[in-house]
Structure formats: C-alpha cells, structure tokens
Length: 229
Image (cartoon, rainbow, N blue to C red; front, side, top):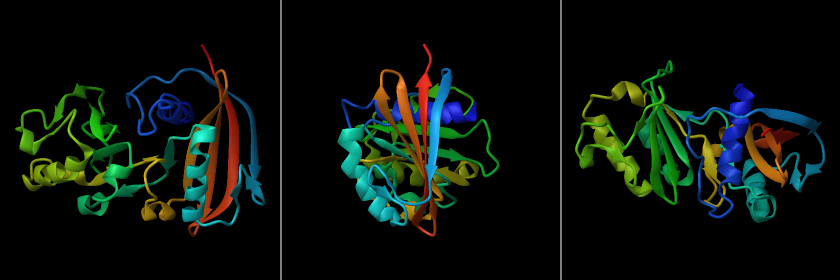
C-alpha cells in the first residue's frame, strides 16, 4: 500500500500537470488505485535516458530538466527532505509543490499544504480534514489560506510560529516534491534517493528511483507499472 500511494502521488503530480508545468500533486490525502508492476530493472554502471552513474546531483538535476518535456516529468520526489528549523527552508518553499508540518513523532494533527501555479492550492490536516486556512480561527495575517501566493507562505508561517501556540507542529518540516521547472535546490544533494514517474502509453508509467551516495549517483532502478480501471 505504501508503494502504491507513493506511486499515485507521483502519477498525480506528473501526469495531471501536462497542461501546466507548475502543477503539484492533486489532493494529498487520497485512496490509491490498484497498480501492478509489469517489469523492473536496475543498473550500477552506464546510463539510463542519459542520466549517468557517477554524476553529481546538480548534473543529474540538469539532465532531468532537459528531459522534462520529452518524458513528461514535472515533479521529483526527494527522500528524507526533512528539517527542524523553519528558517532553513525559507528559500526552498517556492521550489516545491508541497509542505508538511508536524510534530517530530508524527501525529494526525499535522498540516499539509499543496501549491499550484505559485499559490496555495489545498490545505489538509493529517486526519483528513480539508481546510480553507490554517490556523482556522486566526486572522489573515496569522494564517495561511487557500489562494495565498507561495511567496507569502514563509512570512506567514514565521508569524504563526512566533505566537507560540503551534510550536509542536514546527518540529518536523517535510518538503518532498520538487517542481522540475524550478531552479536546482542545493539541499537536494543531501538526499539518498530521488524518484519520478513518467507516462509510457495508456495506463502504463515508469517509476524511476535514483540512488545517491555522497551526492553522486550510485544506481538507478526503473519499474514499469500499470494502473487498473
């Protein structure tokens, strides 16, 4: 189920965005459809679609950007992109299509923001509740609302945090889905894995995992999946 959900997020983020490069995932909380793996392959030498083993993360990102139109790649998952300080993600927020806030241990109170066309598109509580703004009872200055420009999100979150009422939800800041049309984020070099999906034909898609060690590409795993229904 976890792999199916991961796959669906990438399919939603990538394939629903073919009309607009900046689209991020659709509804973050969603029941995944049935998916079946057709085939898989893995390499530790050579290259895959010009993505070459041994290249740096910056070089790999540039190559993925060059494949963006041809392969329909709009979103890139960045594993373990978690932080404990709000100021550490200030420059990153506009480069990603989602942001999750939660306690360190993970709770159903966590808040999920998704961004589209440089605006806040959706806000969810981890429990499944959909919000128009968070916090719900605050004024516009002390809340992030659907429709807000992404450029205002950091300052609003800083103001919310400064009240001290929601400090526990700023213990873990997760920012996983990179918008491929946006510039490279140097923090990505610290991730052990990136992944992306790309449509093949009809309901078949490749899910590609790029595995890194010390900021250099060590291996590539590609899986061909098919969605049911």
